[in-house]
Image (cartoon, rainbow, N blue to C red; front, side, top):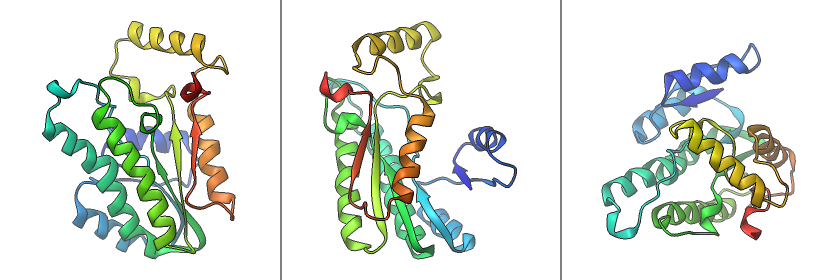
Length: 207
């Protein structure tokens, strides 16, 4: 099942996935809607939370606090609500995987808001792994991946960003969605992993 606030995003994902895939629209900032969705869903095996807005970047003096609150609403409080109302429906042996980002451990100028919410997500992951045990809770921490998230950039700027990364990253290539998907699958299948964060960034935090 694919769930997103964007109908077009849901349709795009469903069209690329196996025939039995179902798609739903849901505003993760609406707690009542999140609770109603999971109550109507019934039992399931795994929950992956990957909702997020394009990353914010601005110096502290130019940061709009309301924008930061909105960022936390989607990235942090949306994840918290999804786990709160989804976890009771997860079958034994299932898991939760949240999604962070490398700005949590490698902040740069202009990433105060981004680094803060992503660090909070990693703390949430560890706390939930303790509170919800034996349900396993982990997080994937991607670097820059070649996805629709960067679709708002002009094509020339986006290509320049990818080329710059390829020149700098130890692996010499920009990550693809499949690289991250493999990590979600690993954490879903590995019965001895909980409270873990796995970084998928081609070595970016090292350079």
